[in-house]
Image (tube, rainbow, N blue to C red; front, side, top):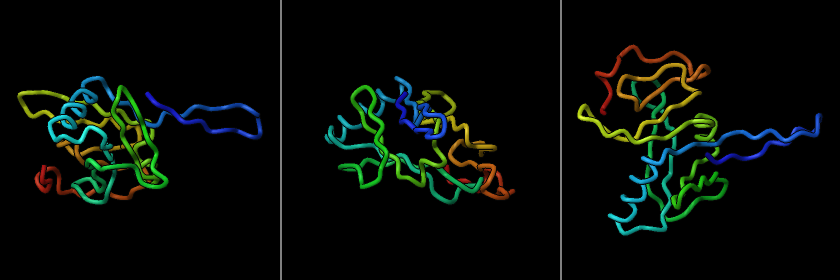
Length: 141
């Protein structure tokens, strides 16, 4: 897990806050995808956008390089980048890759989500308002 530091000037202590954890299984899949697409120096952008059946949804995309103000998480030879807005929702999350007969893929265990869609691709936070009552039937995943 990679972390950044927050300095508390009132107590002169340093608190370490986890940014994002990536399991070895997820790292291996990311590494394989980079090799298969012949883009070994690209980064994987992990982001949150509006939509999905719970109000917010996760997204991932390869990009040539980080953008200004991105947080870069480097682990075991792969780099993930997160924009400041998405970081508010992903702080402390863990990205894993599940290989299952019932449908595998990347899974995000997000401590900021108070509820998630059954498909696992959308979620709701405590301050994101009411979730849609549509359920997974409206989800495109």
